[in-house]
Length: 257
Image (cartoon, rainbow, N blue to C red; front, top):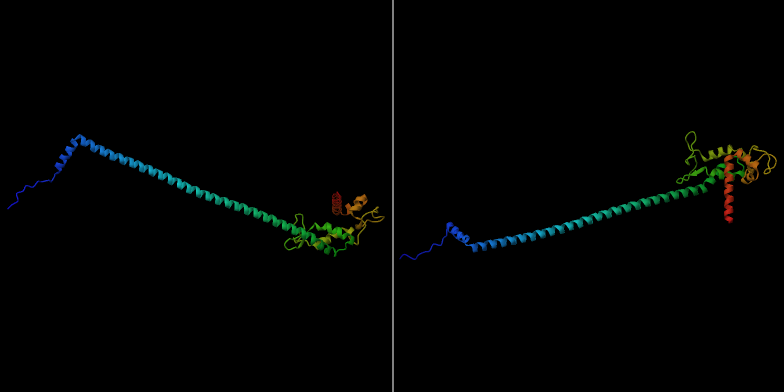
């Protein structure tokens, strides 16, 4: 037996939906409700977007501050490094300067001590091979001493030239101390044992010729004739001896005060 129960068709067509929507749109109250709901959702989205934008701006600001702090720290570290390098360079320069000054002073001290200790003996050794008067050896040694230098490294002696360097001969070879001393004595016959007369009698030497032994600062300052004869015979030696005598005299006065 066939089922005759009526079946209700609930299927809707696009036309029905359009009709239904049309009915909703036609209802002002429902339309306002829908629009209000949509506006509320849009407002919610707008507020949320603003909040997100504010959070993003805050994050960007914080990130910029963090990066600025990192850059400042790096810059400070670089500056500190440069400062330390500068201080190191300054300290190194001061140390080098101090070392150079100390080294130069040590060389000067060595040279001075060597000249004081070595030169007189070398001069006396050279004088031993010359016909110098024994009484003139001490004064001659003092006069020649400033003309002789010492190499601070090898301690070899040399004759000083005008610039303080070794004096060279015509063949551009260093003049030996022995040759220099021999020439020095030969050019000053009044200090040789076979001396010649160099003046007339004076109160310092009595009648007759003056000898090298009479050429002293004391005699020259006490007797004008001795001074005149000495200046003619050895102007350089006379001037140096009198200057040394005056210096020693002043020092003696200063010690007595």
